Amino acid sequence: MSLPLRILVAKRTPETAAKLAALGRQTFHETFAADNTPTDMDAYLAATFGPEQQLSELQDPNVIFLLAQMQQELVGYAMLRLKSDLGLESGKPVDNRLEIARLYVREDWVGTGLGATLMRRTLEEARAHKCRTVVLGVWERNTRAIGFYQRFGFKEIGQHAFTLGSDVQTDLILRKGL
Image 1 (cartoon, rainbow, N blue to C red):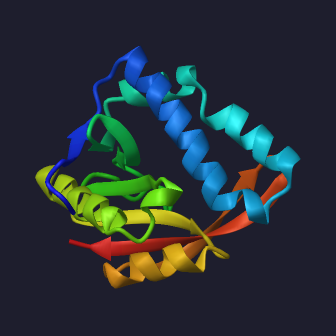
Image 2: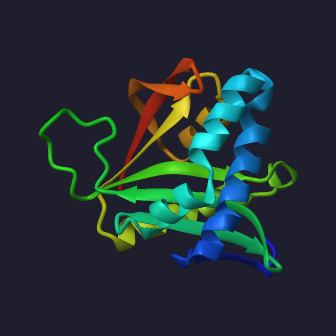
Image 3: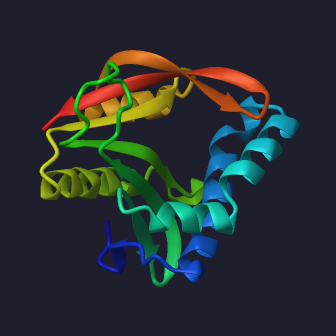
């Protein structure tokens, strides 16, 4: 990655929330619109990527957003959730766990190494928070992302339902020990 690229922890402000909402809508649409109906996509985007929703997530003390910025322009991000119970049996302790809830780069940045840079920074963040496990959910049909996560040592440990609009899809749950 070239030197002007910066990965920053997001400020917990309404301005950041608005930028995240726009980037989230853009990257999710670029990634999944071709494989889903416009109605389901619109419903999901409206429910998930509004400034109010992003501000609520930003203000959650167990959520960390990493922003990838190139010359003041947002080009990708990761949303990390501490103490995640994704893939855990009920009643098991959630301490020392980090979930990658979202990791997206703009379509024009796919293949540049930005995703790998965000992943390395995510793993650094997990270690800094003394996490021993990193988990994530990935759509079973997103073979490019599955391959990406496998290159970083993630292994499938289960599945769960993911609802996009009215379409109930299957996400694979992947895990990596640190």
